[in-house]
Length: 113
Image 1 (cartoon, rainbow, N blue to C red):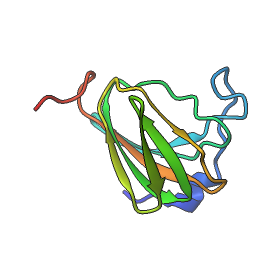
Image 2: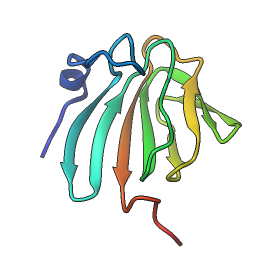
Image 3: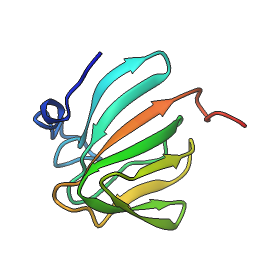
């Protein structure tokens, strides 16, 4: 299966919700078993809450600061980040062109070593 970043970005923002009053900044690209792939392009405020699955972020545009459990990481195109299930995290200081792929996988609660 193939998906294209440009086509997904044209579908954003998604529906308006209480957490996302300007519209959801994410869209699912595809899913297989426990794995799902999304595009995440928040504008203004990142209101995400911890997820039940482990996740990977692959930054493909712009810059931001990723806060994982109080530790701040500069994020730019070409960077990859792992966030374990249930870790508090969010993006701050996002440029207007910030966009990242997000891959979720594995059991609820994350994988163990």
